[in-house]
Length: 284
Image (cartoon, rainbow, N blue to C red):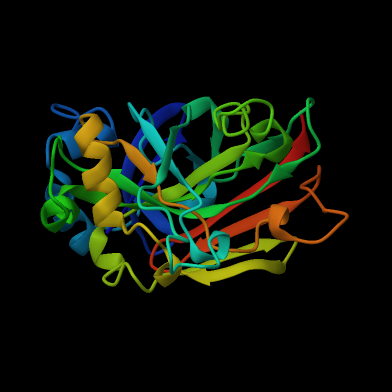
């Protein structure tokens, strides 16, 4: 199943994506859950299965305003330099033993259909298409062998980066948290849509041209390890999001002069089994 949060008729809602539309679950479960995060936290996603199997869409996808799949995640973690495109030599200690982990704030993103802002303070806005892991249950000190049982589903994260601000100091935080510099969406797909996490195709298009085309087999620290690792230093909660790193093809890797994102660019972030996240770029 694919679950979407959206606004329609002036109200925030959630439901199941089916046949080019949405089966609205908001009123059916209103006595217990007011958001998709509540449904995840209540471990009640399976209760929506009969709607997906037998229901018909209440509204078309073209009629809704997309919200973030989980509208209010408590925590967002991002993993840096987690693909072999960034670590050409894996032998002799070429790959990191532990991942680079840093937090991002929700106002650094826009949902599907939203406008990404090229910041006033920089011209170096870049894209990074990543598998996003949505945590499904409260998780602390979980082993790798049990980590995937803690996953509610997967979404797409464009973990947009402002590259020159990554070097203004010794930390990633400023360059990774510019206002509305990335995107998340369009929805959350349940794990059965990605049966082989080591062979997921990841494609980014800029103005119709393919600029990223890789697969998750290039990932250095795998998803079960990332969940286990993060759960050792903090408690993961339902709805929390982990962006797992991006394959090669980001602008930072290209030659000179670099063609940074600019106003008017149209972006498509596609991940096999999940869907396509679409955004445009405008000047702040």
